[in-house]
View 1 (tube, rainbow, N blue to C red):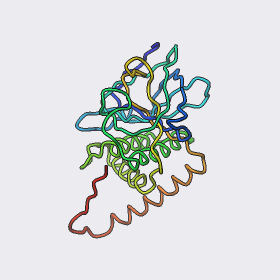
View 2: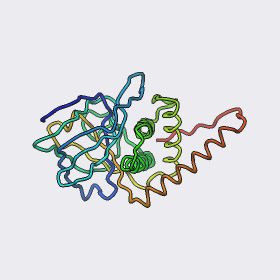
View 3: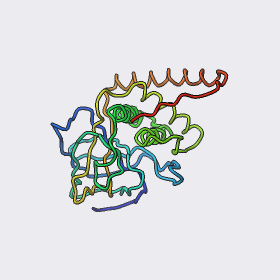
View 4: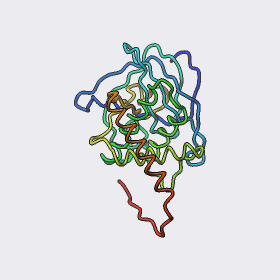
Length: 241
């Protein structure tokens, strides 16, 4: 590890790589780690950095945007020589285990929702004027979906809270139809750029991302209209695996 700049109490990210699979795991050499913003969210009573993280992959000029799934681990913003070795894999558990890629089982539906959120976030991060607030909301939505917080334990500004709820509603309605893809550290004891679990990113085609954002915009209109309707007594809740 060299040129360590910051140690962040940040959730570990699972990069969702849509084209890979467990049977065709790829190796990535990470030479740099950066963060899009230092925005924070209050999660379970603690303030944590919540943003997209940019990985520099050896041989690739474009950043690989990733999001944390672990709520408590440290992530070191730095340049790395020799590179850190990561391997692609599928997201089938949350990050409550002591070893990278282990924890409570996630259903394919929940994993697919994380995939959708990561794809939207990647599109936002790659846009001409990325919104730090919306990228923070994407990170918060991923935590909410992964850990099934009820009621919400991820709290930000009023706008961030609204965006988190809208992103989650969209992901639930448009979940990817397979387990999300991720990268996991291959270093000693699962150590990568900090003591981390998996990291998720989405890499949709531009047209796919355009459709996602268009659908999200329509969802926002629907949610605003629903908010103007009279409140109804009682609420039906559905517990998801």
